Image (cartoon, rainbow, N blue to C red; front, top):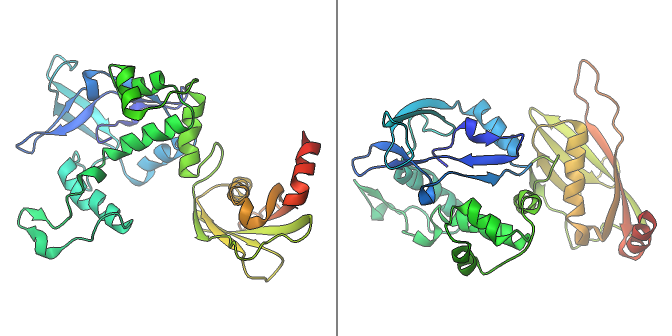
Length: 316
């Protein structure tokens, strides 16, 4: 990850090219070498993650560096010049140990997976965090593999993406085999992250309650009110004007259509709380004027569990 360059992202082929890894030697000096297994490879890049990679340089400028190359596959000069997508705040290559201490461990603690930093365990050599080797950053590699396999990806394709020499090793390690590669793999990560092709990342501010079934009768009508604030939109599900939100999400920057489409995906994923199925989410907004960005209004048509099968049959 720390050796990734913007040029490694192939949007047209929907692939991420893994060409090098960044290592730090025992003297604290950074260098490049081939990825795991001493070979380059390409992995599918999902439609939901691609925009995030494209937007990253807008906030954090990539830095061009020249570092030694160690091992096979390097340039004859023994050095490689490339642009690093991710660096420290000072524009330096990232030291994995420092990143683990300053970023990864605090994230684990914030998620409640490890104990907070303990001053009594710290020293001039840093410390203060639980060891938690089983929760090292490498576990995200296993997460990726398990998500792909649960979606039905091929063990052979997964073996290539992970850089394994033998698919049998991958099979023994992950104990799954499903046919078809490529399309499912790209959508699997999006589904796991709550993203989707054409959808925007969002954060749930107020979940839909399951105590009160939102839909009474066979058909129901609710409204989505999306209000822009800077680059984000607050989207509320309401019964009518002036009523308290039944649920609320925060959506990243995008057009009113995409914001409401994302909110519709959020509703569809919460059928039990709605008491039925979402039949339609329609943008009812007026076009924004030149002087202001208008709020977006969406109409949500719901079918109760009783009527949903009938409507689905009609649609088919």
